[in-house]
Image (cartoon, rainbow, N blue to C red; front, top):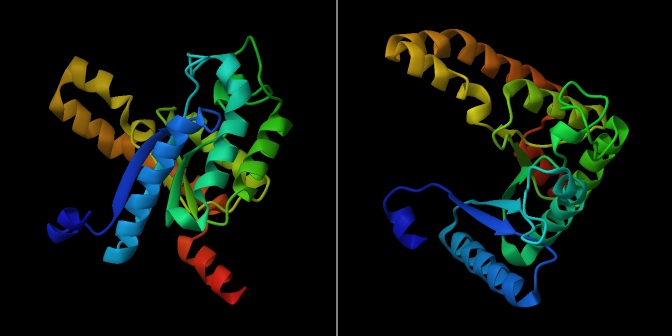
Length: 223
């Protein structure tokens, strides 16, 4: 970490694939890895952002309904684990706790099998948020802009106070086909028009429930 700070890094972000129900042998190594990074960040006085992505090798397909039914608990347990002070995480970057394609009663529902009702999905947002006292932001994880915005609306509906979002593909992935068909100029036009609208739509969704990470720490200090 010191070398990164020496060349100008103002924060450290680590991506970690994590299954809270994996073997102790595997998870102890991962936990110690995060502890070490957290300790180094604290010593260097730089913020530590942890991005844990959940998985299950036994289930395999992480886009299928079997994993979707397990995902809320996996996200909850992972957030709960890395919120512990021993890891020194300043901000968690987490997945939304459901797979939108399997949420019945939503615009995002793909049809066919369901893993949760709309109300159950909302409850998963509430429970996972309650698992940590750390500020956290939601990842778009490659969903479309429309789907991501709807999930943020669900979080806001139950009063989840997340501290923002991180999204890439949600805002620009549709531009790839435009570029492939019509080139750079068309891509730039798309970004200036639809790309901008995507960002504005997300900003509107954030106004429904997101709060500054500073507020989280200020509240903790007052308590």
